[in-house]
Amino acid sequence: MSKEPVVEEPVVEEPVASGPTRYGVPVVEATGQIVLHPEVDQWLDTVRALQADGFCMAIDVTAVDYSAHPGRTDLPEGVSPERFEVVASFIDHAAGRRVRLRAQVSETDPVVPSLFDLFPGTEAMEREAWDLVGVAFDGHPDHTRILMPEDWVGHPLRRDVAIGAIPVQFKDAPAAR
Amino acid sequence: MTDVTNPAVDEATDESAGESAAHLGSAERVLRRDDSSAVLRLSEAEAAVLAGDPNDPPTGDAGDQRMILNMGPSHPSTHGVLRLMLEMEGETVLRSKPVIGYLHTGMEKTAEDLTYLQGPTNVTRMDYAAPLFSELAFSLAVEQLLDIEVPSRATWIRMLMCELNRVSSHLLFQATNGMDLGAVSMMIYGWREREEVLRFFEKVTGLRMNHNYIRPGGVAADLPDGWREDVRRLLELIPPRLDEYDTLLTGQPIFRDRLQGVGVMTPAEALALSATGPILRSTGYAWDLRRDQPYLAYDEVDFDVIVGTHGDSFDRFAIRLNEIRESLRIVEQILDLIPNGDFRIQDKKVTPPPRARIDESMEALIHHFKIFTEGFHVPEGETYAAVESPRGELGCYLVSDGGPKPYRMHIRGPSFVNLQTLPHLMEGGFIADAVAVISSVDPIMGEVDR
Image (cartoon, rainbow over all chains, first blue to last red):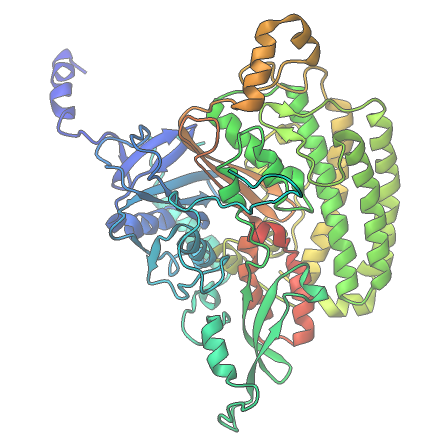
């Protein structure tokens, strides 16, 4: 390589502000693990690409409510933080690699396409994420609560739900403040 | 770990994936989402409408012999508080649905209110038959975020304790599996041997269960004096008892008839349903995190991954029985290989200082005080750590906002995920076989419901 292209390289790189991508979505490495950051409307296509690439099992699907943690610094450039995040992990047994997907889900429309038709094992995991965090999964075959009672109102793992306590009254002790 | 910049896509891998997919069988059966599925996707409210008023039951179609039967949550063969809704036709199970949550105590919510040092006290209560694995997954995740490496003796102590825990967990399975199928004396034998292992745990950790022994930074205490003799005693005591189990169960025609060909699953179905552990291995698919993605020091010990052939309940029983032998083999090697050294990292920001230091150093006293009041801070970030528990992949997804408590802690419970195989394993079988199937999946409800 001559020296001239090296001078030009920064000019070429500048338009690609979003950093490295893989499967068409931004990718970062967190504690040595590969993390993809697809948009919600890229969710199904990214998982489909992963499946075609040998990722044979959906290990985990969960959700996080980031409302009490503003100013996160672990998102790649170009990914804007939202209140909710759906996190899914996949594993490729043949190549022995893992990958994690993190999609930002807005508070106003917390809906993510269900992965049931690609990985039916996500059925219970998605029900749990809906039950506890309140992120809905579009196209889920059995979109019901799983751990909380069916008539429960609210989603306990949201940060605006208090942890709760049972008041204990000790004999002859003054009542709690 | 693979390299971020290396997209390993080429035609060769695609072809081999296609070949192996044919070899694994079809996953069509578990992909059905309509009424033909083995999963009875029926809510409580819908079931109540179907049942109608008990004093005035709906007459319905006389030709339709199907009925919904409720099993559990208080049922001796459901291993705790698992409840099943079964759609029956005569004695045959058509569709079914595991109904869970009866033991839900919000442990993931609780974890957000406990410091990282208190965290293992919480997670250890999830899988109460194999508590050390939850502690290990949690501790590994915290250590990944802290970017610290524990001393090698701590790693080997963790391995020793986990393998013995696998033995005690599988012994419990032998006991309950035997009893579920009518081999009631097996219940006594399994518990008897398990108690020997728990006695060793009590000596090391102070408790028979819920140890809080594996903590971020190492383990709570070094192994006590005489631990080698205790472990050797276990290594001499348990193998002959396993041979007795072989006589009692493995070679027993009635026992075999109850399990062989019952609850069959193909590798493709197990993969599609995210099943791990003995359920996946029973289909002949050799996948064990200890061998395939080694953590701790599993790459330094020699052991076999036990796989089945038929994917039935008998294979799952036999795999667990032989995994006890493999675990004992690992324990035997650990006795020779365990190094001397510290049992926890001497990082004053993570582990409390030794007691003697507190008397002579003001700084040590301050560290001690900070760790037990505020807790240590973990850098912002998120990570996932997985271990091979007796039931499959147990993972801990941990998010830190830089504070002294986890921002979010999620446990990927193997029982929780494996429970999804139940409807597919029971489909078309007799109700009596449902008991054998539940038993062979070996769910621990504390970890399912969390």
